[in-house]
Structure formats: C-alpha cells, structure tokens
Image 1 (cartoon, rainbow, N blue to C red):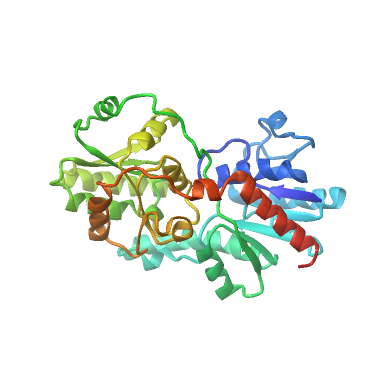
Image 2 (cartoon, rainbow, N blue to C red; image 1 turned 120 degrees about the vertical axis):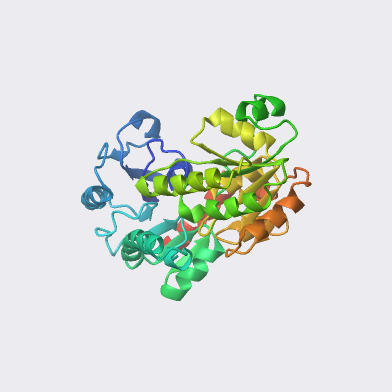
Length: 377
C-alpha cells in the first residue's frame, strides 16, 4: 500500500493540528509505504524514514501560496508515484485531487460552526464569522472532492451527515501524546511562589491558543463569580497567533484590570518544563471551548490525571463521559463556577482513554480504514 500524506507543519510546529498531523504521519509511515508532502525543508533527515520525503516551500508567504504550491506538487507526485491512497491533514491542495485515487481527509476541527451565533457584539461576530467562512470555504471545496473522512469525534460525523450524507467516515480520536508523564521538576510551593500565588491556593488550569472559540471570556465570568474565593486561582496558558488573537487577549487583560480579578492569570506562551509542572500540580482542568474537535490539552490533562471540566463539544463526551464533568456547549460563568466548586475537591484519577486510545490502537484502526477503502468496502 502506497500512501501520500499531506500534512502542514510536520517540520516541528507545536500544538493543535500541526502536532497531531506530525504524529499521525510518523505512525502511518511505519506501517505503509509513505510519501510525505509538507511545507518545510528543515529536519529532512529526521523525516526520511525508509523513503525520501517530498518537501517544498520552506516558508510559504500565505495560506494561498501554500495551497498553490501544494496543488502543483500534488499533481507531480500523483503522476510519478501513483499512490494507492491520499491522506490529507491540511485543507490546502484540494484542487488537484485525482478523482481515481481514494482520498481521506482528517478533520481536526468542528466544521460549519458560525461564530456569529456566539458573539454578543455584532461587529466582532461578523468579523469572526467572515474569517471562519473563508476557512470553511477551503474545507468545503476539499470535502466536495472526497468520499472519506477520518473524524476525531462523533460530533463531527453528525455535522458531516447533515451536509455531506454520501461521505463515509470513521471515528478515531487522537490519543494522548504523553500517557505517562514524569514527575514534576519543582515542588508545588515553588511553582505557586514563582507565579506570585498564595501557597494555599488551588490551580484551575486551562491551556490553548488565545482564540475566542476557546471560551476564555466565559472562564473569566467564572473567575469574577469566584473572586471572593481567595484559594482558587485561574491559570491560562496560550499563544496569540495573530492580530485578532491579540485583540482578544487585550480585551481579556483590560477586563481583568477593570474588575480587579487578581485570581485570573494570563501567562501566554510558556516553556515545556513550566507547562509540565502546571499540569503536574493543577487541581482542576477546565475547557470552556465553544468549538473544539479533539483537544490535545484535554488529552494532556487526562494523562496527568487532573479532574476535568469540559464543554460538550467535539470529542469531550466520546472520551470522558462518566469520568469528567461535561457541561453544555452554551454554558455561562455560573455553570463553570459550580463545576469548579465540585471538582476542586476531587482527587486525581486515571482515565480509561490513556489505555483505550494509544498510538498503536488508533493506527491499527486507521490502517483498517485504509484497507476497507482499497477493498471497496
């Protein structure tokens, strides 16, 4: 079986779909005759595992350029290599998909979510929806040219069935990247002192890019409700990737200052060591996301056995029902604050997903999907 994998960010991007796409590629390449099409020529020796990877475009100037380059290279590869199957982890490169080659698309986000429905400020909602629709346009063009989807949650499958009833899909969640993390490198007292937090405090942790869809403004509502609880401190870790993210961060920071919320801490991007220590000592992990697929941060929290609160989006219910507090997608600060009060007294626990979903088991499922497609099943 010869598989052409298209994955953006395989050169070493961290977080989100880039990390997942890289991990899927590495595990697929161990089981199939794999060709890689990605967006960077660095670390080529590391990526060449038994077969030369086909790489291009060291630093694409834009997503459009990436799409054009991917399309051109995809045509060349299909003509020369004649793969049995194409597996796309990126929305670019859809134009050149040969109709005679079965093509699988992995969806690492929830499709068809309109931010306009979630934002009270009409202007902000319009801008966010416009940006979301431009991404949806790429996705919809890609989905219109394929019959197979690797979905990371049942929520995605239900959304797909509504718009693309003919697409065949298989649900295979992402597994935890570090199922058995090592011990913390610093004590809890040292960590709290480093963060300027009282030593008797409990850590309410949330991790992810500072994007509106992550729901940090709702988490901030919960912090305001609980501001008299001096023992509860909210720690948010996440990067700002663009100007829109920066605006969102500034809005959060402005509100923290105006309302004197000393219990809410935006740390921004942190080192892997600090993130490891935060997960190691966290008392509760909260995902207040409005839209999510299969959150890597949630999987990390499960690996560290942290009590979890998560909105009912993406794979949250698939992975954690009965083992975590699942609250409605359209939750508010009161919903989250009540869940935090309950979970803050819970002890750490092992989650079944760390044994049920490993890279070996999910790769087995994906290879089975490949074989079924090629067999015409």
